[in-house]
Length: 361
Image (cartoon, rainbow, N blue to C red):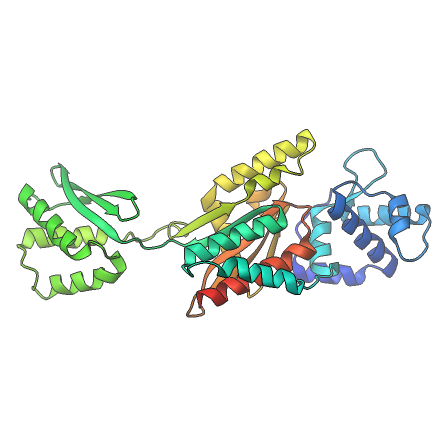
């Protein structure tokens, strides 16, 4: 099918190199395909093109475009559909992106702003709204919130080993194992637990960590040397280092059921099933969406251009959003088949990201 990857610069160059007639035929063919998902034939194009071209002339142009790797025939019919390379050319070199209507802008702002302005409320509502408007899955990568702690306890599990049990006020429980000094009595673990609970309960670790470390350093903590060492080790254990890029992020997915609405053939069912598998691989999806942080605007990922969508043939339209300090902290987007309404979804995602950034500020 000639579906090698093509970057934005190459797409624009290729679009310029196409003659006026091939460019118009290709643009109208892709438009028709994105609208109905069916292979497009020469007779259909002859009715859509603004100037008169015979079906035979259009077939010749389509054959040239197929030789360039921009079109292919999914079966023996005369209709053609764009390859992923062709979609990239269309999106980056030929597509005319319209503006959102004033009513759409107002609806997006009202839908997202009708929250308590907490980051989780804002981004979750934005994801729901994008899913509903696009009839695809809405996604957001947000920073994992540092929940207030409810209880910390050290439990001896073996000589030289203790389990740190961390219970957050949101109900989540984490367990970490740490090394303890030889000959440590059980009373030291209990004392270390009491010490940290008195200073951490109801607070986030970030807000209390520096204070506790300073207290341990200044000898103000009324603890013996062994217990102090346990507290210091436990505090370090609560803050893992060298963590995976996805460990401090949360992926919110809304409206994945919309992906089933356009399923007609068995091949579509298999594609959507594979896409659901892609969504389940949250770490990989987070990594892909994080790439959208590199630019100031919208990023479009099409099909097998990236490893994650190599089997499902999916597309992701994503844009970064910033916090109150203007720092890029997350990414919001729409995930669906490669036959997305890019011209509509790109400005929708872009504007939603801007609204989220403004609300968080």
